[in-house]
Image (cartoon, rainbow, N blue to C red; front, side, top):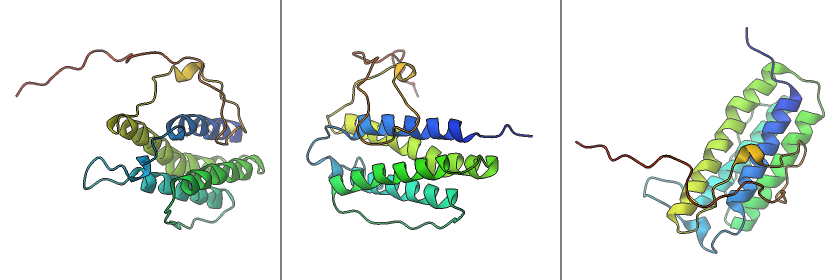
Length: 172
């Protein structure tokens, strides 16, 4: 038997997603939306549009409807605004209902976990595009349940360099 996912845990996860996404999406180069690391990859703009799709899907799930409806975006500012608006709507939908562990588990494992993956992809794309974000100890971040908009507290634990051990080159 699995542990129930409480609405407070899911809402904290949504706030964590907002914090990390805000860091990755702020101060991007003017042409970052069109950045594409490989021919088979999505552009940064299409990833942010997908983030909006995911959050709107999550909100519909929270309200009992499981309908996927992708919405193409043509503008970086509009896609970013749509994502944060949909993230706020998802948070409100989760906050406004009694904890239903199965529904919340599905919202986490589907749209929320997928969005965390894509925020990580965008962070890597920033580095590839020559505009990396600074490393941060996210365990020290000021993340507040319910604070899910673009305006997030400043970083508390950024540092220079990389905390990872040096890369090893695999020999053939």
